[in-house]
Length: 298
Image (tube, rainbow, N blue to C red; front, side, top):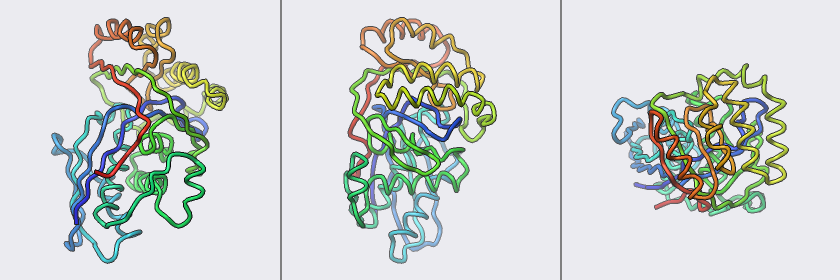
């Protein structure tokens, strides 16, 4: 019983740590999960190129999915291979969880409806939708302790593609939109783990987060990113210099997640100007695009 699936990394529009409301957009960076089920009674995991990586999240994804949709299987192995750097604010955990849940469903022979919006999710009846699968991965993330909010905003963008706006306190998808953006990503050498974020400091910028949510509600995503980035860079102790450098050129720029990566969106030629500045910093700079298709079974 074997299944394979891919899910996407994502960038931040609104960090959910302050108010529980978040927004994210899918990036053209994939994580692939391969799941093989057996009757061993144990679930193990591995990450390509990272033999010491923590695999509790993907193992828990397999366990929950088999418990919910299986018929007696109680063991197996999951292996992930990712273009999304870990602990960089680019939603590597959400991508791994989504890909693992979809791959496990495939191994179990469970079909997943390719829902893309709120209405499709509400009308799915008793079928398994991609949002159902997404929520299962979020549950696993909470169980594994790799997230503070459950990261439904990040997970929904990774699973559905496009820009999603969510209430993470209820795992509700409030809206989804499609945007074809060029994206510039700068990732410094250091790493930051979401579970270690200072939630109390983030809660102090709740007024700014509510302003960002208002901008998102008006589909002003790029402006929302910039306000979010300044507020949460200050709250989490990251420099605002990269964002300030990008502002004259990019449509929007933000700290992604709990850092340390910074993401900017706009016209490609303008982002190339920003890339020339960011290339002078330590770390890696990558020009990519948004994705609107989301996760899928292979």
